[in-house]
Length: 290
Image (cartoon, rainbow, N blue to C red):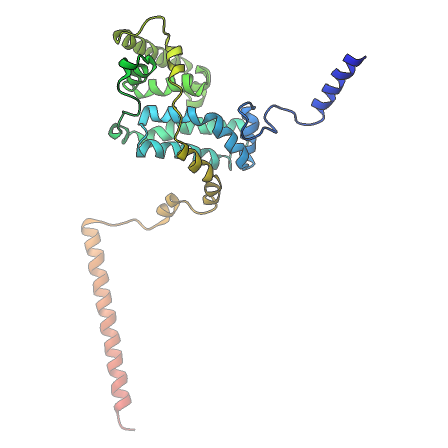
């Protein structure tokens, strides 16, 4: 009877409310249901955002800096990705929609924003004396920088963000086979480069990449991101700079601009001349004998 009572008590406790893991998760907890925390972000809850950020900050950071570095543009891409998550929470209807929007932005918008700048970024954010240290994971990251863009992106979504090839294909609306082939050829290329570098064959790519995941964002970035949550929410209530520029009259240049300026100068001089004439008439009228 005691055992049955315990089972019934547990069942009643579970069914008495929403007991999904993470619904009442604490901010500091690293064990929570991702969708439940995303639902908190949909309710504009800073605690939920902080909890999601705590879990994914390292993954997102490595996803970005391994393509763009940690300089000005890498930092801008990192901030932009987290701002998108907050802003997308205002329009997304479900946790699944919000997650999909975040992944798409991470893989497409951030990439397109940084493509023209990434070649200017220094790539020395990891130690250069990798062979002396014997840390083959750093050798792997060094070779990773030379992969094609699509191979980098799909490889990182699988090994860093941690989603399947099918999920990657759905996110970017491409065939699953395309994703699978890109990741396959990226892994083959990296394996060949590692063997050429003298890496022992017993060390698999998966193990080497796991060892490289100790890189985390600077503490100062963490504080700035979390402090920006309320600011990003408030900014969405105002017209964005992009919309203001779209509504502004188009700027003119060249001959058109010169002609416009000349017309404006003539109009100004004519109006000034008319005002001076009208003042002269008023003076004559006022000085005439009555």
